[in-house]
Length: 382
Image 1 (cartoon, rainbow, N blue to C red):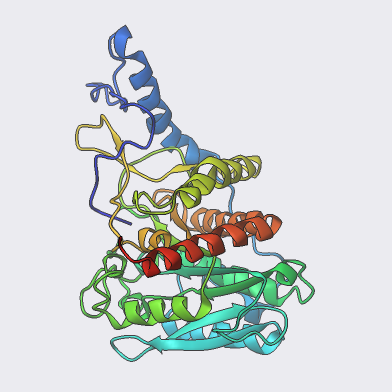
Image 2: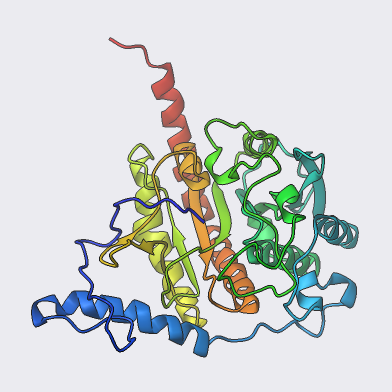
């Protein structure tokens, strides 16, 4: 995910961590006055080992027919899907289910189709006003971080196999699993040094123009960026989730997350995400054996836990400034590929379940925010 770091300590107060010890332990125990900082470091450092040792290997339900297994599942979690394989998989889900329809929302720089799956009961069309809660989820913005893509394909498939899902009575879901399709097909085994799998290789971070697509939500210099924002304009989601994999620091969590930091994001949006939604999702995922926390990295001196910037060039910051519930998902690059897919899938589903449960409340929140935006824009200065 983001390679830049900001001095935004996401906890109250700044943790001062111990120095690396000569015997190879993650951190030496400091003087007693710095005990709390050392404990914080120990939890993160030793917990990294725990996250690998207690990981649960993902299993494919026997009821899933072979033609509806993802490339990751078929390969026993050693490979990821090409862009053509994504297209073929989505087409099979579309053919199988009346409530799944695939649409092309644009073309990449190299001319590949950008396809989204619309999951909805009834004849829903993009741009149609619908009273149900609307969620947009994307994967593969950095295509080497491919477990989000595979997790989203599993979600689409599982909905295809559940024609009577009660969720779709209250939810319209649009999933774009392979946003950076050009980068996805430039696969190599060394594209993500340090990431555990897939062994057969993964795509690259930038698009065909060598743009980082998660830095392009203001300039919109890329075809992909303009196409996604056009999709957001038409669909008008209440929730936006962007699926990534971490780049750096070792810690104890299978998945970390974040929400918009920009102070111009409407206060009630930030409060609901930070004070209600994320704490509840953390609790629920914990009951499934999935430890989660706020996304970040240690700074170079290992004394601060820092998150990424607040600028709207980032997808979730941009979504927040649109008055949308913006959520960043970051699976842990040092966990196994199978477990990263599981973590990403369960995190997305937990978000959707929470929003379905509170659909009316969250819909009103987002709609009121947008009404306030419009009223403010129309107001004449005195």
